[in-house]
Length: 78
Image (tube, rainbow, N blue to C red; front, side, top):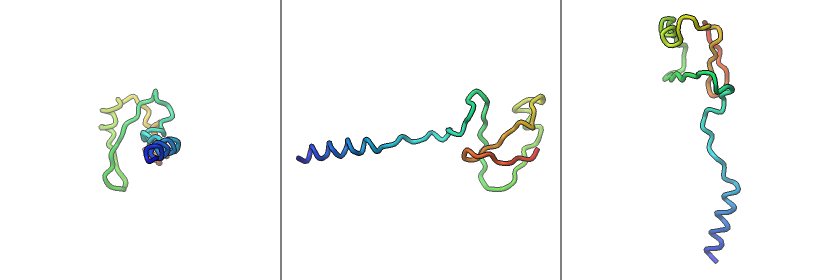
């Protein structure tokens, strides 16, 4: 009796189980490059143009940059 009750409870729990999300569901186009920037404290941060050019090259269009936080677009100032 106990074994059948335990088996039944496992089967019922299996129907209600959900998989975890990976955290990157906000990515709309996987062919584009995405970079993660860790920010330890809330505030306004400045990334100098020399650093941006060293990562992306001087020919990249900075006006096309988009910043996301938890899947939502955050305004940036260029």
